[in-house]
Length: 62
Length: 396
Ligand SMILES: Cc1cc2nc3c(=O)[nH]c(=O)nc-3n(C[C@H](O)[C@H](O)[C@H](O)COP(=O)(O)OP(=O)(O)OC[C@H]3O[C@@H](n4cnc5c(N)ncnc54)[C@H](O)[C@@H]3O)c2cc1C
Image (cartoon, rainbow over all chains, first blue to last red; front, side, top):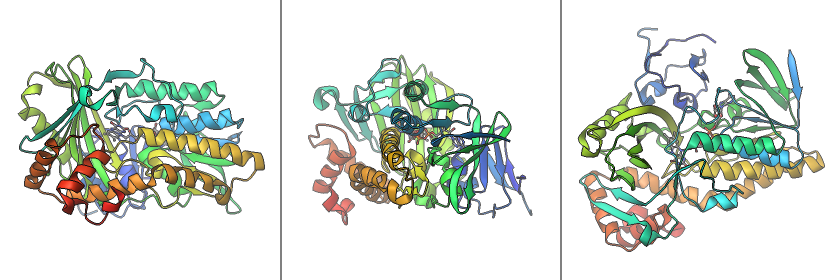
């Protein structure tokens, strides 16, 4: 898996797994402390919208 | 590659997983439970409030080790401060507990071990294994080492993340209105008079969800918020929660010592929580109260049912979907009506503006409810505010 045009602010992320369970294409994986995005990610932005602490953003222009 | 063979592999050591593992092991099944984290029950993703009634139903003996506080009562508040307060004198002893969840989860895991289950920590499932179309186990990484765990049946108890089910082809996708984004602080040095569990509802406080204060005694309280997915914006759970805390004089001298993130699903459960050689329990099956977001008891119940059904399946050596269907019947018979009713009510309540919520809470406060639970509240709403429950009044 590679980080795919998603930016994770590791200083904000609480590793709660909320984005994992709400991803409509199951493209996010949380190995305890590290969020990984697979290339299934279609940039729908749902995880960005839902993150309680604004730890996720979409890479501009990617 | 290392390979382990067993009868049942349970993914996730939350309450759902531990209960399933316990009842499987008790039934004589060779049971392996894996947990990706390095500590069961931590980090916390819970407000730790439970009612008392269901514990006996699932064979859990209340233990002071994991009971942090007895709830004195409950208060429901509207945005402009109308409050409906219910205390123990009125509610009897059936109010509830505030748990020490990390100890509760460990106690359930211990019970699973006592029954004979094995636990592998720091072991995360990365996929399921299919051979000739049939699920035969899972792939995992244990302390970094790739491995396979082969089993006759998989119990997916991986919580809200719920990936095992999806890898196995079960649709656990949630609509945006059927999930809540949550944030909670453990506040210390709060106003010492805080004894009641508080639920504050209304769009301006917690859009589509609610804000909670669950006191744990000694000036400590879990203060958190859930916001409905459709109404959420990035980082807003934090913005709303921070504002509430800074405006409330009871937290003037308090500070947070723990930050908890987490989501809850608020749908009425999966269409079907079993398939050939796999069974989903607890949050993984989306079986959680859609109004309160309370899911500990649901996870314990479904975990127990799964273990009981798998024990029966093992006698015939049949773990097909058909053989697992009794599980489906058990959880539906016990919970489906209530889940469905609360799901409908959640949808309706989320539509109401602050003024209507004010009116609603004011009306409820003039009623004589004996015990705070969603059912009793809905009964009052049905009587005094029938419009809110239009379309599902038969379920109340
Ligand atoms: C903020 C918040 C507040 C809540 N407050 C309450 C409350 O007051 N009362 C109440 O009753 N309920 C509450 N809930 C809900 C409650 O926490 C859940 O319903 C309950 O924990 C469900 O238990 P479970 O065993 O299904 O899942 P979980 O307890 O989530 O356990 C799942 C386990 O699986 C592990 N896991 C996940 N993926 C993998 C993998 N790939 N491999 C290995 N292991 C994995 C996780 O690390 C975790 O330990 C709250 C939830 C949140 C988010």
